[in-house]
Image (cartoon, rainbow, N blue to C red; front, side, top):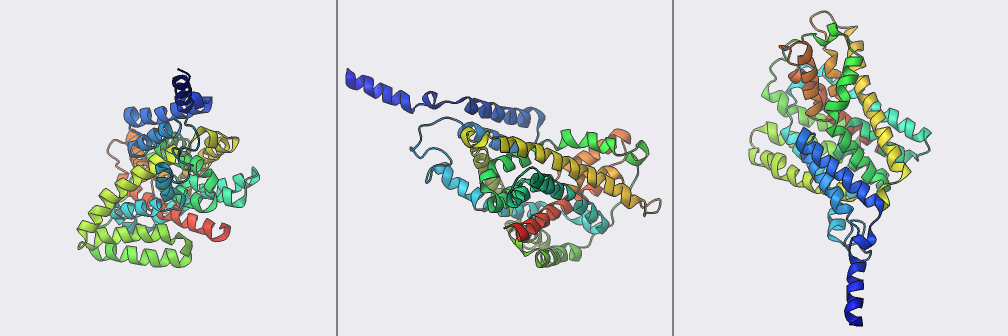
Length: 380
């Protein structure tokens, strides 16, 4: 009988109930909120469902030493998490993004690239704010990249500069990517007038096949010669785009834009979510990172809109840019471009801005990777 009682007590000792802390419940509830938003509101479901479910998995309490948790060496989750810690998954995602991206809108109107560059101000604003709040330069650089609204880049740079803060940085970046339709419209309306919101832009010109093929080659040469530290992301982005535009590697392009990016997204979302283990994640630093991330994202959106207004001071009537596309300078492709279009349609139901907004939007993808490379070059 004593033997049975001891066995039962030992069994109970290993259950989640015996190792439960209130922080686990908090994180599980946050995971459920992510899943609910993904299903009911369709906020980035491909990201929020894996992250939300990962949060649930990562916050089921367990007895330490059983190689169960994501931070326990050689556990299954820990092995999968190596792809995040060592920056393996983000380049694969960039390969898929490149294979899915059409740079025609940017090539047809190259000055839209300036909007994507201007929106990266949010990254450096958050960097300086983080320094002022006592974070180390490396931590501040990793936090700042949240302003680009680019989850893979945020994971890549935090794996290099601030691995201890990776969970908070990654969840913050993906959260704000998902909340693009909520956060950006009020800022866009605040900094534009009714007259500006109905500006009609000229239809984009037809881009030749030669231009599309040449762009990824020249793009990787120019950006990586300037910022070689951005090579893992920028090299894969432009390689994926060449697979798409060459016209002779359709199978490879389909693989990159389908199975590869889907597998990498599942693994990165699930493991990032699981890394939010309450005992490691619920700290004052994590809460501060969420606040800084929101600030940098707001600054990036605001500066993109204001920069378009500044550009319009030097453009003739008929060539002006609708400042509503300024928000799409962040790297949340294609959601921020859709927001530009949707807000524009609220004020003119025949003024479709999506094609124009995709120019700064894809420029933002390149811009955030370049900004990450700049930060890595002097912080690592």
